[in-house]
Length: 329
Image (cartoon, rainbow, N blue to C red):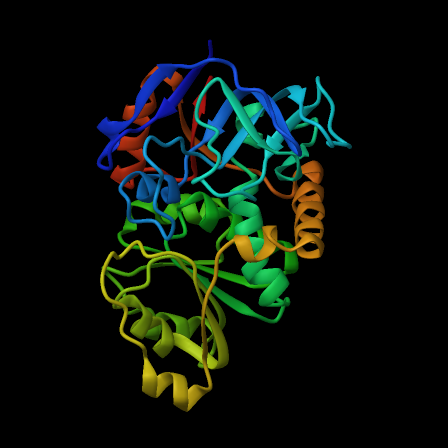
C-alpha cells in the first residue's frame, strides 16, 4: 500500500497527512507512476489553503510535478509503456489528480520523457518553471534579443527559469528581489541586472538600464500595488504578464499609464499552453531541448524526505528558497 499525501481540511502545512492507500489502477487514458521525487509549487500551498482559482474536493490530493517510473498503463494509452522513465507536466486539475506520494495516477498526455542527463530530482523541478516562463515570454511575448525583460520575484523556480530563457534569446534580464540578500545569487543565475525593490526605485533603475525606453516585457507573479510601479517602468506598447497573486492584496489597475503607453496587462497561467495540443507540443520540445543541451539548468534549493512533507511546505512558505524545493520519495 503506497503512502499518499492528502488533506481533509483547508489550512496550513500541518493539514497535510501521509496515509496508506490501496494501489490505484489507471483508467482509460491514464498511467500510473512509481514516484521517485516531486517538486513543490506555490500553487499547491494556495490550493491547500482553499485560495487557488480551483477549490479542492475534500479529501484531496495535491501536486503537479513528479518524476518516476511508469508501472501501469490504462486502456487506450499509446506512446507510454511500463518501465518508461518520465516526469509529469502540469496538464491536469488538482481537483482530479495529485502527485504527492509514492504512487500517482495521471493522464497519459501529461507525462513526458526527460533527458538522460537529468536526475529524477532535477526533472521534478523543471516542467512547471520552464513551461510557465516559456508560455508568457516566448509563445505570447515573442521575446527578442533587443528586449529588456523585467522578472519580479526572480528567485523563485519560475523566475530563475525565466532568466535562463531570456538569456537564451540574447535579451536583457532584469531581476527583482525585495532585499539585497539574494542579489548575488540572481547575478550568478544569469541576471544582467538586479533591483532590490525595498532599497531602490524600480522606475528609475529600469529607465537607467534601458536608456530611458522602459521594459517591453514584464513577468510578474506578485500583483497587488506593485502593478502600478510595473506600469510606470514599462515601455510604450509593453506587455505585463500577471501569473500569480503573491501580494494577496487588491490589484489596482494602472489606468493612466495603460492609456498613455498603450499597455497590455494580461492574466496568464500555464494552462493556456498545456490545454492546447499544438502549444503544448512546442513548449515540451523547447524545454526538452534546453534541458538536454544543458542551456537550462534547474536549481534545487533544498530536498526533503516524504516524511518531511509538512516541513517542506513550511519552508516553501518561508520564502527563503532560491530555486526549487523537491521531496525525495
